[in-house]
Length: 110
Image 1: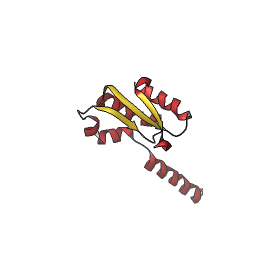
Image 2: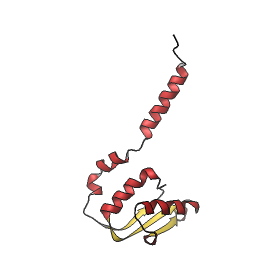
Image 3: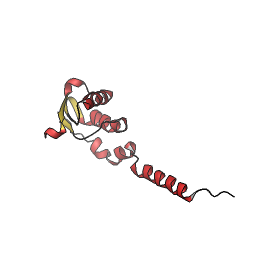
Image 4: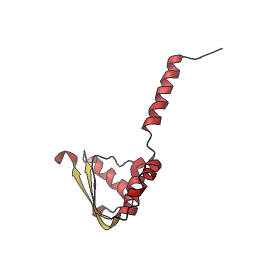
């Protein structure tokens, strides 16, 4: 009977535990904060600081865009390096935020 290597089993358990604790459930977070996302308030400015705007985070941005913004809302988005601006712009466009409503600033300039 082959029992396998206990160290390998423990390593796999650690990896599973890491992913279980760090997995971001955007649907759960949005549902948990439903009162915020469904607020009747509309904002003139949205400021995003220190955020990667990766695909996993776009549902948050979409909820904000759909529920909390009006047609003239301005977006201010930070970046670390110049190379991030293009990827941030693409992410925002996926959420129907046009480039003429977005201004970028370097986080280290604050």
